Structure formats: C-alpha cells, structure tokens
Length: 312
Image: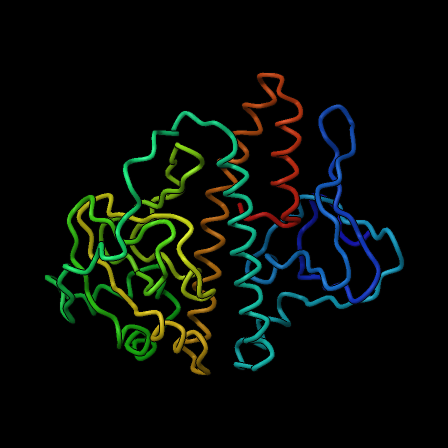
C-alpha cells in the first residue's frame, strides 16, 4: 500500500517501473478500481501545491521502483529557482490542466438543470478586434493590483514585471472574449467584474465557471499552443488585463522571482477550478445515488477518486 484513502497527502509519486492501482470502497462494500498507474505515471501531484487528503487507496500490483517527492522539499527547490524544479512546475501545470479538462468533460456528460440550448454560432476570432486597448484604466489600477488574489504573494517590482506588457480592456456586459475553437492569442486577468466560462456538449451548453477578480482565463490554451476548448464572455461590466501569448510565455518561462510566483499562482487558479468542478461532481454523485442510478454514480465516483488527491 503506497497511500491510504483519507490520509493526509504528503507529496507526489513517480513510477519508474512496476504498476499500481487506485481503489475505493463503494457504499455496500464493493471495490472499484478508479485508476491504474504504469511506468512513467505520476500520482499525488496535487499535494505539491496544497495540503489535502487522499481520495483513494493506491496499492502496488507489481514490484515498483520510483521516486517520492515530498512537498516541503519541492517548495524549497522552487524557492531557489532551481531549473529542474521549474520544469517540474511546468509538468505539474500540464497535469493539473489535463485533470481539470477530463473531470469537466465527465461532468458535461451528465444532464444537469443548468443546461441550456447553445446560443448561436461560436464567437468570432475577431470578437475583441474593435475593442480599445489602453495602458491606463478608469481608476488607479496599479494600487488595486496588489489586492488581487493572483498577486497576493508578489512584491511590487514583481507585479510591475508581470503586467509590463499587458493592455487594459474595459468591457461591457455580454462582450465575447474568445470562443470554442478559436486560436489562443492571449490570456486575461480579471481585475474588476466577472467573466463566464461556458462549454458545449452536443446541442447544449453549460456554464463551467464564473471567474472574478484575480483569476486567469485562457492561459492553458496559450501554454499548450492550442485552440480554446471553452468560450468566455463578460458576465457584467469588467476590467481585464490582456497579455499577448508570446509575452505571457516569456514571463512564464523566465528565471525571475516573478516567474516562480506566477507558476504558484497558476497552480492556485487550477486548484480553485478543480475544487469548483469537484463540488459539482459530488452533487451529481449524490443525485445519481438518490435516484438509484448505480452505474452512473459509480462512474462519477471513479472520475472524482481518480484524482488520488482531490482539490476541495
């Protein structure tokens, strides 16, 4: 047994050889395998970012050899801006993003009261082409930035570095920001107001999240160099900072202290999004159990517990 369901997660495991499986015990005592780990596989990676508890028990199914990376050791390496730690941080970002996409996809497969007919055509790639960009906002933007959760660990000079190339967008409610399938040319920091993230499943669409001040939007597609998998629009009048893709990647891939803190902030954003999706998943599991849909409930339970350490 490598980790036990319910125990405090201490770090990440990387398998060099052998195999393991993650299992949970369902109501009624049945045993459900929720994930299998092969050579090169990683589990427990969320514990590198924040403290949590294991959602499944992981048992070796063959002799295993590998590494354990303890959270405090990892944080010490990151604080020293160790290049190897930076690469692990990036890998962790991609793993968390992939988990978020998988769990969101699983949630979208389940009918929900908030589903609605998809609204018209996706946003045009030119949705923001006529919007005025500025270096100034209608309020004291620079004094406001340190109050945002995204920048709470940043020093003043690190905030200046992070937003040096950013443009200010002041948008009315309902303004499309990017659409599904649109190439990711920029990412956005919400300063004031809120934006709504929606995804489609067949002919229906559903709100995945509402992002408020201090949250990032569109950054995963920028980092992965792919099109957006969801759409974003303003839910109310909003002030955003727009960072062109090349500027964001330059900061993200840099060696400065601001880059290190950006990685940490991104992980926090991803964990917050996972936490929101997990709460939705938990609600869907309960509803499936109540109406006697055992298979659906088991499948949703597997999606939740396969995270091994789940964001709350």
